[in-house]
Every structure is written in C-alpha cells, then in structure tokens.
Image (tube, rainbow, N blue to C red):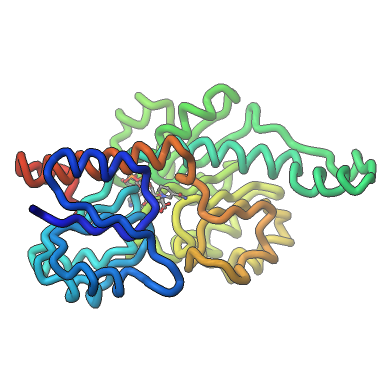
Length: 312
Ligand code: NAD
Ligand code: MLT
C-alpha cells in the first residue's frame, strides 16, 4: 500500500479519496515543534507528499528514499525544489486553477477596501469618530486595469471585474493576441500598462524571470494615485523601489504575500494600505477544490499514468 504524507491542513476530502483508492494516508499538519523534515523522518517510507505552501527542499526529499511524487495543492510551486526532485526522478505536480477563484475575489475585495478606505474608516467610526471627508473614496467603475499574468487567476479576474465596465490591459508573453482578445484583454508592453493603468494586479509565478520584475523602471511610470495589488508572490516586487516612490506618486499598495508565511513583523507594513496573511486561496471552497484535485491527480498518476499536471 503506497503511503501519502500530508503535512498540512487540507480538506478531509483528500484523505477520503486517497483512502478509498487504497492509499495509506498520514495527515499531520506541521507545527512549530514538528516541521516537514521531522514528519518525513517519521514517515520515510512515504511515496507521495502533498503540501500547500510548506517547503519541500532537497533536504526533505533526501529523507524520503521511496518518494515518487510531490503534489502542491495549489498553484505556485516555488516552495518545492523542483530541479532537485527532477534530478531524483521525482515528479512534482500542482493543481492548476483549483484555488483561482478565491484569489480573483480577494483582488476585488482588496481593491474596494483600499479605494473606499474600509479598514481605517471602520476603526475610526468604531471609536465614535465621524470623519467622512477623511475617507473620501474612489470607484473601480470605468478604470483601466492592468493584469500581469493571464493564466487561471488573471482570466478569472477579468471575468470578476467585468461588471465594473473597466478597460483591461494585459501582459503575458505566453498568450496570443487572439486569445487575449477572446477574453477581453488588450495585450500591451509593461511600459504601457504601468503608465496607463489605474489598478495593476500581479498574477505571475515567482521565478528567475519574474523576481524583482516590478521595480523602479516600471513603478516610476505609474499614474499619480494608481494602485498595485500583489496576490502572487512577494519576490516579484522590488520592495525598496516601491517604498522609495510610493509617497511621491501617492500609490496605493495592497498585499497578500510575504517572504515567509509566519507570524512576526512584515517588511511591507509601512507601505501597504491593505495587507492580508496570504488569504487568497484561504476559503472553504478553494481548500476543498485544491484538496480534491490533489487527491484525484495522485490517484490518476499511479492508476492511469496521468502526468498532465507535472510541472518539472
Ligand atoms: P497560472 O500558471 O495559471 O498563470 C500564470 C500566468 O503567468 C500564465 O499565463 C503564464 O503564461 C504567465 N507568466 C509566466 N511567466 C510570466 C512572465 N515572466 N511575465 C508575464 N506572465 C508570465 O497560475 P495562477 O493559478 O494564475 O497563479 C499565478 C500565481 O499566483 C502563482 O504562481 C502563485 O504564485 C500565485 N498564487 C497566489 C495565491 C494566493 O493565495 N495569494 C493563490 C494561488 C496562486
Ligand atoms: C498558491 O500558490 O496556490 C497559493 O499561494 C495558495 C496557498 O499557498 O495558500
């Protein structure tokens, strides 16, 4: 019986599907006292590991001599050493699109919260103050929205924001003009997007090509009072460049992602107008879909040889 180690909180559907398919499931979410490495040592016979954003570096892979498959129940797999896994003939899969709607909805929530100053206005009113003029807001309707990355989340965001009658500019080197037109987006160079967009949302992976992509070269082009939303990965933005130009341009910055998903001071706290603890996919629906897909992909991988979601 193949053992599946799940060192994370995932909807119980993952264990149900795998158990019914004949797998042995060990699901023990990591704690500060017992991380992925400790759990790997205790389950060194595991052939599959399913994680969310828990890290799977080479050191963990080496603790699992029978490992054949790592599944990321989500989209971004920068938490897994995919190259090392490949060197060990270990496949890595993600669950593309499974949690995308949660993120797309979060972007709308962040844009509205920032434009209408929901957080500070709530605090002020709760304290008994009445500061309407201080909380004069902005509206999304009719604005120009720039989207970097038109994959599962980017395309869903287009659908979710369409009700606001906005103009979409998009940047995605892997998307054809025809497909972009089909989804209602005009492809444009980054220079145009940063110069013309009122709201810019990032939906690209963090990798060697995108790390530090959003830097002064583009930030300096942004319109006065424009908004930047990062629900992708923290490393895509050059934080020092953003800090340097934010006040001058009166930029609005909404953030959901950090170098480390953990308690403690956050480096962007002084420049984020709204900041959330990586909540994009943190919905019951997204957790269920990601868990279900992770289990289904694992079963299909071993029973049908389905490698369609392998990313390495
Ligand atoms: P996806 O793979 O469906 O889409 C990514 C898109 O980015 C693709 O269309 C790809 O062509 C494009 N792309 C790749 N490199 C690019 C580049 N250099 N410049 C421009 N576009 C580029 O992934 P997704 O499901 O849309 O998720 C996107 C990212 O969002 C993930 O990689 C992950 O890091 C992050 N994410 C965050 C949360 C959250 O909870 N905040 C949840 C899911 C995903
Ligand atoms: C993802 O890449 O799927 C997300 O960041 C989800 C998560 O890790 O919670």
